[in-house]
Amino acid sequence: MNKFRQLLSATMQIFSLTVLALFMAASHADVVMLDRIIAIVDDDVVMQSELDTRRQSIEQQVRSAGQKMPPADVLNEQIIERLVVESLQIQMADRAGVKISDEELNDAMKGIAQQNEMSLASFRVAVEKDGISFADMREQIRKEIKISRVQQGIMRRRIKINEQELRNFLESDLGSVVTADEYRLGHILLPVPDDANADQIGKVRDQSNSLLESLNAGADFQTTAIQQSAGQNALEGGDLGWRKAAQLPTMFSDVAPEMAVGELRGPIKSGSGYHIIKLFEKKGAKVEGQVEQTEVRHVLIQSSEIRTQQEARELAESLREEVVGGRDFEEIAKLQSDDPGSALSGGDLGWNRAGTFVPEFEKKITESTLDEVTEVFETTHGFHFLQVTGRRIEDFSENFRMGQAESYLRNQRWDEELQSWITEIREDAFVEIRI
Image 1 (cartoon, one colour):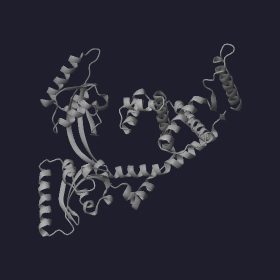
Image 2 (cartoon, one colour):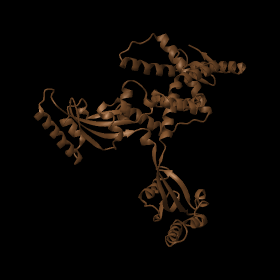
Image 3 (cartoon, helix red, strand yellow):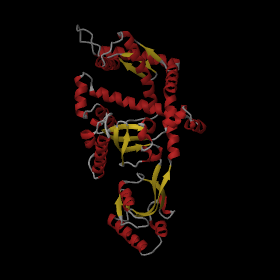
Image 4 (tube, one colour):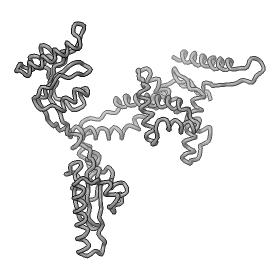
């Protein structure tokens, strides 16, 4: 291996000299160096242009933040080390066959633009105005996504959390806080002066009751909050943002968990006045853990070399008529369905949550009443008719809480474990710095 690396180093020296020679003028001109190798990293190299591009980007960030630049030699050393570590991870990704499609990269670039409240086109203009190549930025994002994929795969193997750890965490005070449900409330406050008499208090109470009636009749909550609320979040339409119950005002914390999304409560009396609240959204184990499932069976008829599209449709129509006429659905599915995964079980697809099937199939499931045999419809797979045989809501809230706990504990250990792994691969690598 040492001989191989010595040979690689020598080869890279020859490569650098060749690049230099190619860009020398014919006889008397000055030497022009367009690029050069500054580090050899296992089977890869780091080029001067990569260092220059990264330094330019970092300098721009530092200037934008109004911070002081570190000494040039210190900055260069840090950037080169970062490029070396990135190269090791990119090589690992390439060996594992990790590829990032242009479509996925475009989505990532759009996401970055949206975070900066720009369209992709305007984001590109802004980047290039700062002297940064948009093409270079795209490739850097591609590399970062590759590196992220590698890190996630490695950390999944290295960070092990057993069930007992999860249960101990869930039983702790911190676990209760981390896995608590969250609520996004809207709030309207009609204030009562500190020295208000009974008549004044009564008028504010009547006004709040009238306002609640208006809201129940369809008045827009956020518009009403902006116009009439004295709360601190009035200009945000009364939106208190996402909060766990423990983070809500005491008078709301007992009410919010009992509310349905879109429900109004009030007027709620406090020392500051009368409050009206609306639950905009909620999330957590109680919400995400309640999963609606549907039990469905179907018959699929496909076209083939000996059956045209029209013939396939006509056969599906004929078979549906037989089922509607009283013939056993299971029997027809076993004999005629072209879906090998379900035909042997009489067309039964089992219990599934929304989003499992293609959109046309999902739409028919949603529209169907229990035990109804649908009309024949077409998807990318062929012609179907289906029957919904059951609907239920399955409680996965405990599984959801376990997932939240595992995610929290994994994130706690992520940075330390990642740094340990990076140190290991750096120590095991052949790296020759040439600057």
